[in-house]
Length: 530
Image 1 (cartoon, one colour):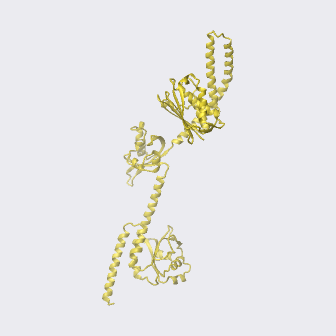
Image 2 (cartoon, rainbow, N blue to C red; image 1 turned 90 degrees about the horizontal axis):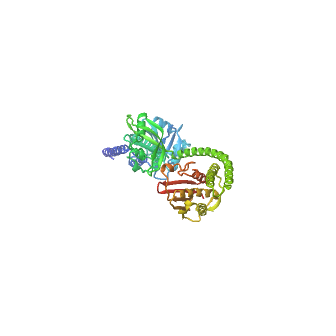
Image 3 (cartoon, helix red, strand yellow; image 1 turned 90 degrees about the vertical axis):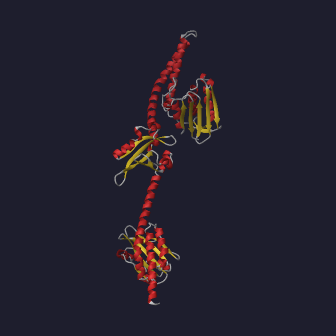
């Protein structure tokens, strides 16, 4: 070929390589992912460089091991992703240290001289005969190696090395950037996962008290979806009576003044209207320039914990009351029996027409009331140990009603049973009968003008019994105290009936609760395990 034609061909080739070089650099500067960078190099360099296989290996943090992160060839790949080798004392160590490239024209001959080179043995098995290796240097530090391999021997020339040296630095920087972005993405996803899967509510609020971040724990705790909460005022969780009060800005002012607040216990309200006792830890959030951006709030629901604490206190109080009641009852019961017997003897000696006989009768009635009180004290103080047998719930209620139906106040009251029939439960007949008597007695006394007592039995798990009357009801302030020993809204009675009923239900592993509206009636809800 004449020299002029060769020069023209060379100039065209150089122009094509320059164009390719410029195009590659532009794409590498776009912030591609590692996979995109690898595919770009593999696909676009085939016209400027002979290769059948391309691979990239990166150094670990101590710079001692190389790990293959990507490999692609036009045939079966044996040396693939995940392969790792120590470079200490190997041929690649000085190459990386001195930042030099390497051409091996005959890989089989090279393997014969270095039979311990496992990576060479593997690519020879793939059919590769020659290779070109270039270190990846980013910001003055070696981060890995690029490998080009061919199925033909002696194909790589210094001009290939020279061309690649112009882009390998850009490739290294792009790979390092992609790797850092991937690490940042993984850390971000990890932190987001921690935040979203936290059992606590983690909320970020700006300086205007508007919610800017809302995690899964907050959604579960308060019931608001992210689109309902984000942008809303943080005071939306305050109960109605605290809206517009100092409590609305207490935490905000405290954090802005002190920089943080820890373990602040307060009351908040969920979307459903349920009141929560929460523990709040809040910290000031500032930008790099020191400007306040808002605050972060970690909210922990301690409602159940507070209920347990109250239950422990209640149990201790009841234990103390029970011990005292047992002592008092024993001290009173025997003298009371003696007094009652003596007065009955005296009454028999009084003529039927004597007015003093009525006075003695009233004394005996008051003694009977005292005896009932002593009996209730002993029942309350004595541990309820159920002797369980299988019984029908409906029959147990009817038996209790038959004992009360003859009372004067019960004649205007109807008992109506609804729901499932034939429901059976394992319970103590005597103790369960005591519960029904206490509840039905209360219902009768709440309806002095008469009415209906509706008992609905649900064949569920646990078994549910709802006892509803149409009586006078109870005020909210009194309703909270109904299960307290000696508390009563009636002029007569010991105030122990509901406390005893609760104790019996708990001994059976069940629960008892009351819903009441003044003037509309009361509903008692019992749940009994099968």
